[in-house]
Each structure stands twice: as structure tokens, then as C-alpha cells.
Amino acid sequence: MSTIIPAALPEKLADFYRLFAKKYAWYFIGLVFIALLSALFRLEVDSELRHIIDSVHENPHAPMIALLIYFVLHKTMHHVVHFLQKLLGVFYKPKILQNVTETVYAQVMRHSLHWFDSHRSGEISAKIQDFQDSLLGLINGLFYALSRVFIVVFSLIYLCTVSIHATVVLLIFTIIYVPIVGLFVKRQMDAEKECATVRQEAFGTINDSISNVFSIKTMGKLSWEFALKLTPILKKWSHYEGKSRKYHAYYVDVTDTLLVVAMGIVQIALVADLYRKGLLTPGEFTFVVVITLQLHRELSELIDNVVFLCNPKLASLKAAYSFIQLDVLETETGLKSLPNIKGKIEYRNVSFGYDDKNDVFKNLNITIMPGEKVGIVGPSGAGKSTFIKAFLKYFPLSGGDILMDDISISGISQESVCQHIALIPQDIPFFHRSILDNIRMVNPHASTAQIQQACQKAHIHDDIMAMPEKYHTILGERGMKLSGGQRQRLAIARALLKQAPIIILDEATSALDSPTERLIQDSLDRMILNTKATTLMIAHRLSTLSKMDRIIVFENGKIVQDGAHDILILEPNGLYKKLWDSQNATGHSA
Image 1 (cartoon, rainbow, N blue to C red):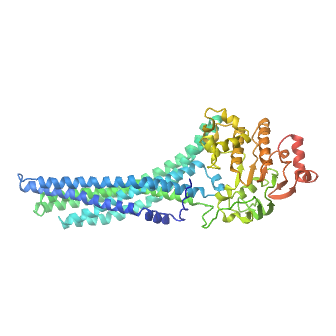
Image 2: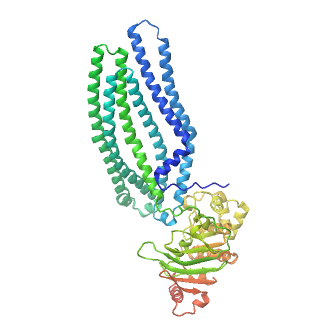
Image 3: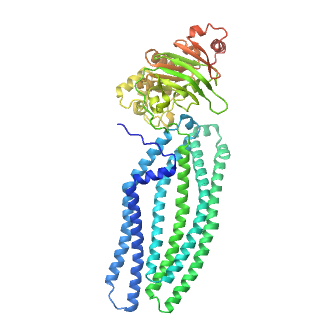
């Protein structure tokens, strides 16, 4: 079953809001309509209360059944519209949750592999979670904020029917209150942005520690983890959280109190005078007092809603969005999929550096023909792994081009490029899933028999069958339940099952003991011998490359030698000869 990958997020958050509002237009229209009705029915309840009080005051023995029915009806409708809001949420929010999470995840996966190496996995996952959580929280916050705005507006309208004087007092209060408090809220937003960024960084640090709990515990350095990493970032988070809350307490809350007290004194004095003069009935007097207190309560709750819900959610959303949008590898439109290829690889004047000052490659050129078996050697830091990473679109090149079967991969999506490559790295990552699921990822349509056949060729089938759940055994996070040799053989099985036209082995046996290495090397030799795929192999032991068609020797980002083992070994002053002699003399890798 194929799933369409969501489109890239817009460059600007404002454009995302626009597209999101357009996609869920009926949901937001429904929320606005419900907020309006909620405010209307709430004011009708207060209005009916006014009529009941006046009716009782004028004639204590008059029947009130009709007034009570209207009161109950409006009260019921006020609750019904809120129930409708929940029903809308039942229908739309799960869809929004799925859609937004898929979209943000897809956006994150468009980043270069170099970007992932530059950020902690916990930080990235925290940003994804914060984005969808903040967006849904912001929708809730804006709905309740809008409801209170409607209540304020309708309160002033209803009050006009009772007392123009009282309405003018509340209107003046609102006109003064909203801009002043709004200015403080706007300034507090800056503090919230800082707080959101640091909070996400703190959770990234916590997730990073949990991911590396084995290392922390076995090193006996839990106290160091607290002292050097966790405590400093939590103190920083606490500082910005306190800064935001102090701003609200010292400025927003104090200003709110002073304005409300002043308004209350004026309003109560006014309505008391109007009541003494007989210009207000008891019901109208009660209605004005209720509306006055209600208006302040709604404005206060509106400010709290904005300060403690909308502001933090919006700040968190902005921080997550800017992080997710940084350095995206494939934002270009028109990226194509690679057709079936034979396995030709060509580097044309390729230049790349991890920073602006130092180039790893400068105008690197090489061609590898389909089906060739090529070894890659050189001292540490010579550019071997960078050579492979460039081919995998690990990062954008600073110059030149890489071609597969004469097709530039710059116009090909990274996913499509990697679909034609079977990679066996030194550190094999596996998912917290079954063995079957982990292997089948490269070929979702493969049968169990095909998977078992690949495992037999990789000499891992017997190990799997000895496990309690066999092929349904859960590997644990990053495959930690497997030994190093088992992980490598499982990776070989996965490469065999993929049947890609290009195979890359990046020091696949370097971390193994000698007996296990010989077993793995035998599996690799069989795979390389029996495949027609183009093979690139970085090896720490040069003897494992002696049967390759050619060997490329790197030094300081340049190819200094290129030829078969039998030829290179005869060049007395060549780097390959020096590496070979050094390795044979010491028994260590070059």
C-alpha cells in the first residue's frame, strides 16, 4: 500500500496559517458560529434573569412559568452549543492531528542527513510533538478567546437597551483597558518565545540522556550528567519561565486591578444613583451589576487565555516551525524519481567542505562503471566517508555534480537515490520492531520465504531460529538485543533482499572481533561475488579488498592512486604500498 508524502511546508509560518485555514475552513467557520451563539445565549440567560426579578418585584403572586421556561431554554441552548463545539472537535481534531504530524514529519525528513547529525534526536522529536500540540492548543485558545470577545460585544449591546450611561462607562473602560493590557501582553510574547525555545532544548537534553542511558549508567557519571547538562538547561528554562510570569504579575495583573477598581467605583456609583432616581428597575439594576462584573471577568479571562495559553502555544509553534524549516535539502519543486539504472557512478568536478574555510574535496573527478567492485582506502580523515556521503546526498555540494547512469542526482530526490542503493554502514541502526519488519523495510512485498533465503545467505538464519520468537523477535531500540556480528549479518541479509544496483559497505566489519569478522567477511565475499551490482567498499583491513576490480586511494580529499591491488602493491612510493606494509608489520588497520 502506497501513501502520498505530504507537500513541503511553506517557507513562512503565515503562509502555513493561510493554507491550514483554507483546508479546514468549515471547521473554523463552525467554531466562529458556535462562539457567537454561545455568547448570545449566555447574555439571554442574564436578560431572562432580569425579567424574572422585575416580574417578582411588580407582582409577587404572578405566574412565572413562561419566564422560567425561557430561562431554562436559553440555559440549555448555551450548553448545547458547547456540546456542538465538542462534536466538531471529535470529527476534525483527529484528522488535524494526523495531517499535521504527517506533514511536519515529512518536512523533517526532507532535511539532509548532515542536519540530523547536527541535532539531537530528542530535540527533533520534541519539536514535532510541540508543533502539533501547540497548533491544537492554539485552536482551543483562540476559540475561547473569540467566545469572550463576543460576550464583551453582546454585553455592551444588551446594556444599551437598559442604560446608555452604564454602557458608556463600560465602553470607555474597554477602550482604555484592551490597548494598555494588550501592549503588555505583546511584550510578554518576547519572553514566551525565549521560554519556548529553551523548554524544547531542555526536553531535547532529557531525551538525549534517556537515549544514551546505557553509557551514562555504565560510566557511573549520572551526577556529571546532572551537573554539566541537565541542571544548567533546567536553570535556564526556570529563568525564562520566571521572567514571563513576573512580567504578568508585575505589569499585566497590577494594571488590570487598577483599571477594574476604577471602573467598578464609577459604575456602582452610577447605577446606584440611577436606581435611587427610579431610572432603573430592580431587575435592570441587577442586570447592569451582573454585566459589569461579567465584563471584567471575561476581559480578565481573555487576558489570561492569551497570556497563559495562546502566547505560549504561539511562541512554541513559531520556535518549532523555524527549527523545522532550517536548512531543508529538498525544498525545490520538480524533483524527479530515478528510473531503473545499471549502476554507473560519476563525480564531475565535485567540491565540498563542512565549513567555508576548509574543503574536503575540490574538483574531484572519477567514473565507476556498472558492476565494478571498487575498494576505497586512505588514512583517517582522507575523505573516504565524505565521498560516500556526497553520493547519498548527505549534504548539498558546494560545486560540481554527481551522476548515476549519466543522470544528475541534484534533480533527483534523496529518497529515490537511496532506493537504488543498499548500504551496510559500520553502525547498523535497527528499529524497535520484529526482525521480519526490520528486514522487510527494504522490500515491503517480499515473502517470508524470500526473507529467510536472504538470511541464510547472510549466515544469520540459524541465529534467528534459535531465538524465542524467531523472525517475530523484537530487536529492542536500535537493535540492542543483537550482538555486533548478528547486527552486521542482518544488515547483509537486508542488502541482499533489496537487490539494489549499487551496494555500499562502509567499514562494515571494523567493530568486530576476529572470528566474527571472518564469518562476516565470508558473507560479504559471497554477496559481492554473486552480485552484478556496482559495489563500493570502505575497509579497515586492506586484505579484504585484494579481490576488488580496482582500489581508490584517498589522501587529503584527493584521489592519489586508482588501480587493482596487484598493480598498486608494486608502486614502492605509493600510499597504498605504505598502508599495506604498515598494516602487515603492526597487525593494525591502516
